[in-house]
Image (cartoon, rainbow, N blue to C red; front, side, top):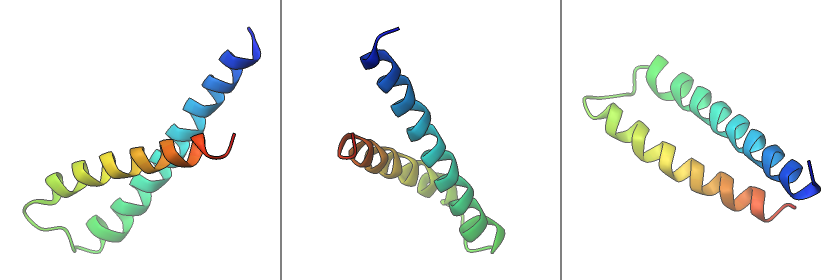
Length: 63
C-alpha cells in the first residue's frame, strides 16, 4: 500500500470521526434538549451536508 492510499484512508477515517462527533453534538444539544420541532429531520439532513463539506475543507487544508 503506497503513501497516497494510506493518506486517503486516514482522511476518510478522520472525516468520519468528525462527522460522528458533530452528529452526537447536534443530537445532544438540539434533540435531547427538546429544541427540535416538526422539521427536525430536514434540519438534520441540512446540517449533515454542511458539516461534511466543512470537514472535507478542513481535511484538505491540513495535509
